[in-house]
Length: 455
Image 1: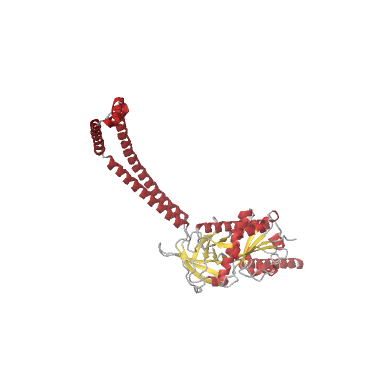
Image 2: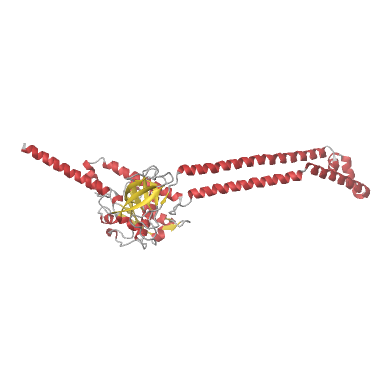
């Protein structure tokens, strides 16, 4: 009996210890053991947002939604309470705002707090942050449908007026055919010249006969008056003027419709409140999808290993690259190894500005990446690659945002240009400080690290 009590005691102690460790890991994952600050925001539509939804600051995991107050009338707004890690409080300023985003195209919704400007004051704990309502795809489609309906109506109007113009032109052509037929049948001076050989001979001989020439001239004048009278009686000049006016009106309506379509497309595809246009948002969305797919592949691989996945993560040396802080990354022996091959990219030569003032990869930067990766393309197909982003701006917030943007730009080019797998490419913003093993104290630009596989 004593032996049985001992076994039961050991089993209970082990169960309590296991429960405590699990509780600590879950709490640490949910940031339950860190200091927080609270903010509030209001939204008309909380589709996909509920208590427990994630909150991010400049793309970093910052906390979660801890409260949601329902409005007391239909015109009111939902009031949400945001529980944010106090370490990111310095990025939230009075001019910061909140938007509803999603992980990729079909991922879960979360709230993104955009960093404020350096000139604004730090937002106080418990303050209200303005929110930007998400653009619903159905509203954009409805707006485009209305524009297309108006364009279709304008085209129908042009078609009706064009048919009227063609009828007037057909009448004019028929009248002209009648005149030509009269000439061919011998009517008028021209008809006589074409059909009566004797008259043609007489005209040739009229040079020496003044009286015959005068008679012929009078006859031509009479025929010309008859022709002009016929034109005036049919009002051909007035019909031609009306046709030209109808054509001008139709052209003006087409121009107005085209301008409306252009304004609608400009509004739909133009820059948002944060200054990023639709192309940039879509490109960053697809980058997030690729990163999410790579993380899912890592999680699936972990399930194939030992109990609690310890063997897999112990062999690799870390759980997830996005869970590492810059300081942890710099001191991690897996990434700080001398065996890792590095290619340094200077910001002045590697990056440029597009017409909207956004930083993009320059032609010289693409050539430098091609030279460094192209010669070893076959050997890096399955090799892990880390893109380190660096920035030497004056503020810490500016360094973090710029270094992250630069690492994403280079990673996107590697994946697209060399057809590399997204799960083998990671990004890490390091502000301005480089790892000790790199041989550099600070850097401004980016660095491509070909991580040597563990022995």
